[in-house]
Amino acid sequence: MSSTADLFEQAPAQQPLAERLRPKRLAEVVGQQHLLGEGKPLRVAAEAGALHSMILWGPPGVGKTTLARLLVAASGLPFMAISAVLGGVKDIREAVEQARVHGRAAVFVDEVHRFNKAQQDAFLPHVESGLFVFIGATTENPSFEVNSALLSRATVHVLEPLQAADLHELFDRGCRHLNAQWSEEAAAQLIAYADGDARRMLGSLETVSRAVQGVVGEEQLKQVLGKQLRRFDKGGDAFYDLISALHKSVRGSDPDASLYWFVRMLDGGADPRYLARRLVRMASEDIGLADPRALRLTLDAFDTYERLGSPEGELALAQAVVYLAVAPKSNAVYTAYKAARALVEKDASRPVPMELRNAPTKLMKTMGMGQGYRYAHDEPDGFAAGAHYLPEGVEERFYTPTERGLEGKIAEKLERLREANAAAREGLGKR
Image (cartoon, rainbow, N blue to C red; front, side):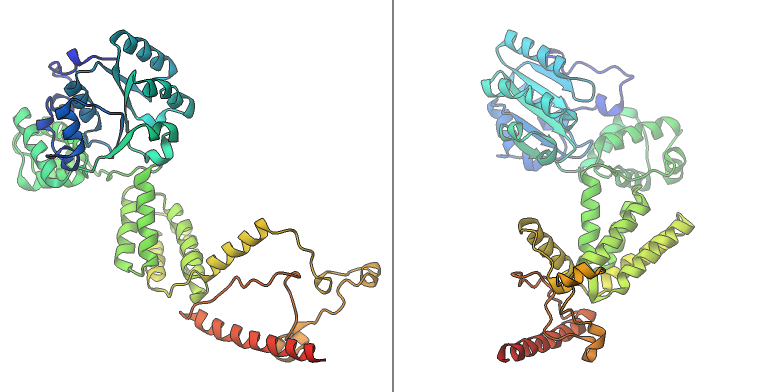
């Protein structure tokens, strides 16, 4: 726990550069102008000293903790910090006791998504009573990770990754603080590597500057940092955003965008086998019978990767990505499958028509099972016109092929078969 009195004491020299450069006033904050610009919500709240319960949602290193501290300082309320990684209900109880001493307090919970439902529920009565102004910080989507009851009592503010200009300003501050010199090319490479994360950039800036004598160039930067991966959360929103972008690019028939997102995920450390599984899914969901070769090709690519591994096998997956992107698209099978499932889930268990039942014994045959069944191979063109295969009372058509790719021919054939069915049933009705 900490109070506003000691919140901004001079940081010791051994603290990371990002901590030493942490802004002490809102005017020093870089970026997030959609929240801190003139007339914007957090700027207005700070100027009015009217702090409200909120959840700050954004990727790492964009200023969530800094904003929370500065907003609390502007409000004049006592500040209490709880880490959801290390804390628990006991820390919440301690915060309640301290808040009661002061009459009201701001409670900041870092990584709030790591608290379970019971721990999050422990805040509710104190937020409702006004004892707590609740401020949560999270890198995960609060819609999924924060209880709806707590979410309804807090305003969600979305923080964005810092832009290159913002990072450059912080880079210049860091260089002045460290008395470091960098070439323009090395600075640009470090800023690109930071990928919107100020803490990551300042940490790398300090590491490289202390390791290199003189001006830091691109070669020295590579030697110190080595091959680093871009920010990629294998279990969080960044992961699902990227796979969503890949899937939608394939569905949108854009091979360039599809390859870009595919490589972004590989570059970030995604398991190629996971990507292979998703490609197989896309072949069935978005292409289906418009081009049945797509499914076979993705399975072959999957098998090739299993045989070759990385990086050689990744080329086969890239081939599958491009093929899926340029293939004709149809979700007709996917739609038909969902419609059939929906009917079966809500419908009664209708009996199998007698003519379609298996009759391996004499008793079953005497009961009428299998009688009247027409063996399609013995019929003209291999089709028993007029026969019924759905249970009685079920008339739905689940599968409606598109006119794209092979499905265009499938649509033509189904139309001919339906016409033959209608004619045969009309003839039976006249007898």
